Image (cartoon, rainbow, N blue to C red):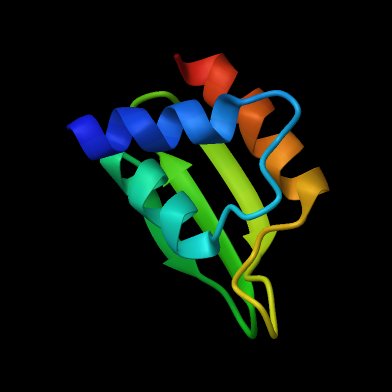
Length: 82
């Protein structure tokens, strides 16, 4: 649980960190009860049935680093469910 709370702190930091990865996001969202739904290509959705919360995004490529605009969108969704 400690790792999850540290990841949450990193994702909610303002201004956002520029080195957050998709793998870290996946660990965080799965830890908060989201289910990963793979789409075609790089499309991926995370859905939390309990909170009725959906996060739509594309896996970053060629790098694993998330774009700042995605981190900001994720911050909004995380604040809604917390």
